[in-house]
Length: 352
Image 1 (cartoon, rainbow, N blue to C red):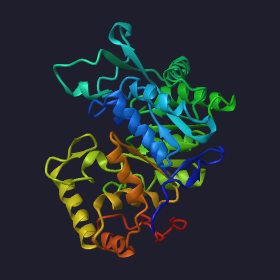
Image 2 (image 1 turned 45 degrees about the vertical axis):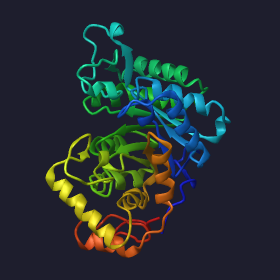
Image 3 (image 1 turned 30 degrees about the vertical axis):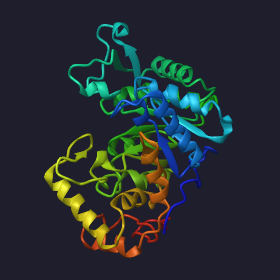
């Protein structure tokens, strides 16, 4: 079984549908390596040319650079042909605009300069999950994008801000959806536990889950994904390579934005060995595995170059042998309850 990258998949009851493969704009904003305008715009253009019609971005990515670049390309296409998501809760401010006592995100990683102790981006990121902060963020994103609307709004990494997120930001998002300003609301996080709590305590449409439902890390399987199935909340998967370890599980590989522990590297190498026995690229298995879960609508590829982008539709559409998944289960390398392409896992609706 394989997956069609340009298949349209509905997002709950919103009336929106996204392509199975989405474009994640963090990398073209320069988060991991600085990218010049020409290369960034060419990569977005190529995403459109291969049929991607779902694009995800955030103010944080390149301190607004990713939104501006995405808007320059998407502005040349009919607005009803694509779905766009961005995020709220983190305001980008020049250093001289940051007010004393502001809740500055000390761990913000907006572009490659943040990793250089001798460089300074000149920007800071301020947490603001208040109603006014949400409205301000939407207004600023629309201005950078140069578009007339945003389809999906995600709360961005509210890990340490639960009370403000559920008590102030969520009602603001709910109102924006009621008024038709946006079509869908959700949250984007690198953890599953708080997303499950949002699903139980709010009326959300979609979550962007980064790194917690992958070939290496199935943390979301037991609670978040079943809860989303029950409540008709769609899941978009990000970080499918777990920061690089599933692209190349070598010593020193990254996992969750930090050097991977040796035990995880060894596990990823065992997964790669099984893939090699079946003549399957590890990246192909990593891309297709999460898409088999019925709660998962799409996968966003965070890519920096045209060549990197081309890997995703090719590997997503490549048929993989069912014996691969059977051996990974038998070796204890994936959760026995996880659905896999072409098979059904115990206690779940049929896998796609």
